[in-house]
Image 1 (cartoon, rainbow, N blue to C red):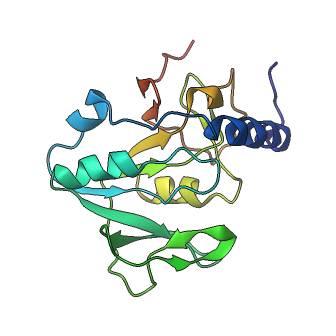
Image 2: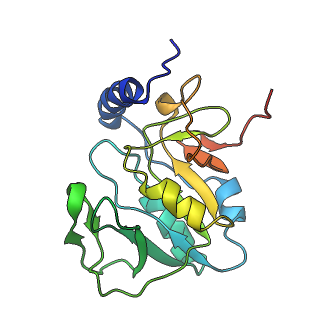
Length: 185
């Protein structure tokens, strides 16, 4: 069934994702991701919230490859998301919307790669997020950054409704590996 309404698709995918999360395998770093960790740089990851595909193994692979890792830091819906330095063992604080994030005084980092959570994606790698626009605004401000979604295969849908401000991904990593965009038809 093709859903053209973002709110309806979000509700369905939240339910499907939460059910699958209970039995989902971990997201293992595929070779296509590891190949993109050259040269050294900065990877922006995230701390998975309930139901989200966990990027922890991807962040660990980046750290082993010599990357620095940043996590998003959010204050309000209107403020831009920042990417702040983080390494294993650093404390996280409670942020808005149930986020766990670095403290506001952690150093800002400019990522080369952004791992992003999502609710749904399609074959053209359009992404449906939670609806606050944090990642789309970050992608627009950082047009050269490599944008990689992290999801499970059940989050793939026939088509994601797209607005003019939505920024597609360069790839999606799911439990089966790397998803490239299909050519436009």
